[in-house]
Length: 186
Image (tube, rainbow, N blue to C red):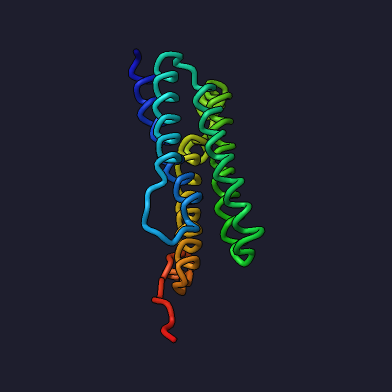
């Protein structure tokens, strides 16, 4: 196994695990009891384990991309359901997180498909321009931001369901955070 492949595994396998956490949270946000959904938990752990083993055997990035894309599709479908039919006033936050994340996902795939060609083009560019065209870096930035916004959406959804009073505030007018006030006592 080459060092490049080992680094790729370190970069890609955690994506499956963290996306499974998103799936679990989104499907468990509308319940009152503090319980564990063991069937869903077992399915997601099994999925992660099987994908990891197959990916380690096949060493094929396309397999990983399809398995990760499948999880992302589940997250997207559940999120769209929530912002269309449960809490429609959260559409802006939901669609913003999705758009930012998908932009990163798109750039990641462009980088994976055209890596050698992009590297050759970057070698001919001034260093600043070359640095800005590092699509793998943009993948990390955009999916990190999109994931953060999605976590904010998930927390907002859960706290609303529990009858708390969440509010999105912006630190320095740009960075969104969630403030949660306890439910009003009658």
